Length: 431
Image 1 (cartoon, rainbow, N blue to C red):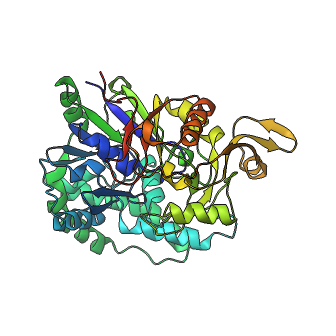
Image 2 (cartoon, rainbow, N blue to C red; image 1 turned 45 degrees about the vertical axis):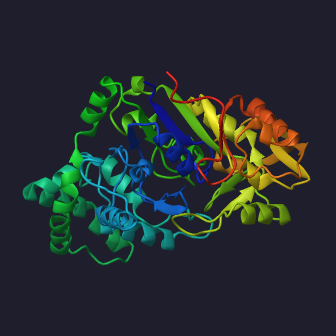
Image 3 (spheres, one colour; image 1 turned 180 degrees about the vertical axis):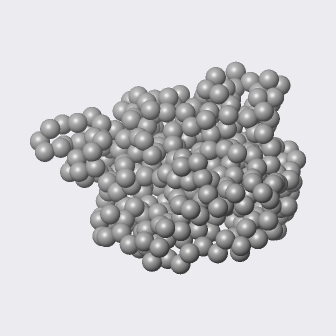
């Protein structure tokens, strides 16, 4: 059986939730491999709306095993709130349907406090646009070997030792930022109180996934954010704190690279971004406003309005190459209905030099201006189309041109938030 990795190929918000939900119906296991609750997925199923942040999208599907991998950083209190919210919507979540890797780092209250204090102290132009939920500081603790992990909740002596090591680092930092010291006893008491609710979900995820793979089960690996926010290959420093590209699915769950059979890149038919950082095709005119209004471009997690712009083929081609994307799922094509003319970025001008990729240096990225190719739009509606025959000729031409420019075929085409409004071209789960 094929195992599939789903990654966003832009700056996130590409519509991964719907696509993962669409694929999860045929998967046996859905595994989240990076990020934290700073990213969100919105699922619409039979008219019901589910908003997920920490949990894998497959958790709303009965009969599936959902997994939170070790590449994720997890706020235990937020997780329990999210579980209760979904239970209130009729979703059954038990240790039989949800597993959390024992080596998953925990986001603790001081991570969010540090995150927000740093952002407030940053001068204009140096703010990252973080959600302030502690994701970055938790990843820092993981790399610094001072994280408190899920398994540590099972032993009081180990837990206290882990907390003491972390506070040796954090208290001096807080003092420098003018933030009061952490109350050790209160923190440990909170962790001991939450442990009985979290530990039943803890498991050696690498072992479980290995067994599932040997048994021929289909595994769907789900990432958060998008490849352009990758800590190594994104628009640094305006990026997230983890690797977002497809290779992280292996290290973020323990499956091993040989367990990945197909990489599906999720790509919006235009471009959006939340927060700070370069955005060569950003539109600050009526077209940009129209894309935002038609696409309902507000962040699931933050509620912040997304910046909108024309499709950037150069950036998507980069993302597809770095993640080894086998096919893309092109989403929100219907948002482009009614535009008389559409533009696609096919290159950049950097101080008079033509580039076919976005440079690495931040100052060079900021100076890049897009080189556009224009295409005729269409007046007919594509919303709800479920076959190529339902699409206007110019819409098909647009899709085909996107394929050519990004050097990657379209595997799925999404024409509305409803999961049924999907055109299947290539089955990612095909053996």
